[in-house]
Amino acid sequence: MTDATAEFFDDLAQRGHEPLLRNASGTMRFDIANGKKTETWFVKIDKGDLVVSRSGGASDSTLVADKALFDRLASGKASAVAAVLRGTLTIEGDWRLLVLFRRILPGPSTAKRPSTKPRARTGRSRR
Image (cartoon, rainbow, N blue to C red; front, top):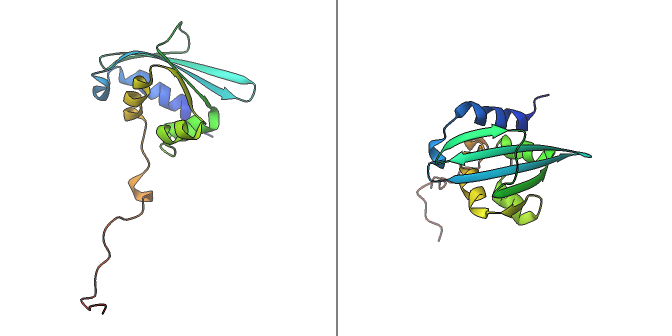
């Protein structure tokens, strides 16, 4: 079984620079609860330059979620905004960092979205 959370942070560390975060600077801590154990990831953003680590000090923003939820966020199966509104993802500190950070979270697959195209008409009037 793959670990979507670890893969997400590993991929982020490999990028080194993320153009979508070129206007962002700050530090984020992710506390991800897995049963009684909490995994912590730190992401430092400096105008798009990224440094990811498993240790660090104080942060500008702290996100707290359970492992199952963050796995869904990291794989594009859940929305960070919806999770905050439901209370399953909490954020302390600078909310703007979450707003910017969610740009790099994978989105839902377009193949799974229902079609928004109008249905074809048969040419007959409904009178």
